[in-house]
Length: 221
Image (cartoon, rainbow, N blue to C red):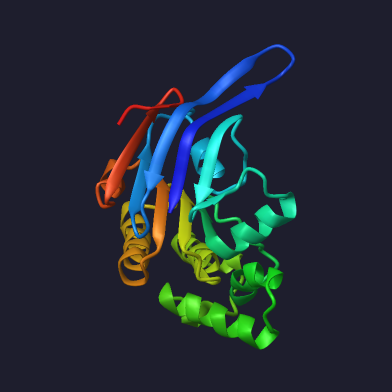
């Protein structure tokens, strides 16, 4: 589902050059739940952003669902992300002025769907994460765990084949983190969603199918 070949990412300024990723080659199979671990600054989020087509590698090839992405225009990349990928972030990235249902609908605004269809799909996504009774609440009225559930609902509302999650349990206590992890595992098992998750938590990583470790921008396991 995801194929990275000889990925290198270099950040340059006038005075310094930083190698963030070095010769990463990685295949993620359809329906796999993969976790990525490593110390802070080792390139985990950079790698996830490249998988999600939010950033481009300095060298190497990225293929998503057997499609080469390096020659796509910005508009084509945006459409591809909207159709294929769902994103979950540690800090939720919800809009506080919008109710929960409206936050979840957001990815569908870029598709040819009616308002009625958007509300139906958003309601179904919220039901999957157990938040049917919170659709008219605002994010500031929710706990951290509930806000992360809203973020998951937003990620899955367009029924993407791939979810990329950057520290989805990082801001939560262990009990709430386990609940979020259960939702992700259920999406993987029941819907066949391919999931790549960056985490610092060894216990969470051990619940996934496979663990990849990075150190100083290189894959060490």
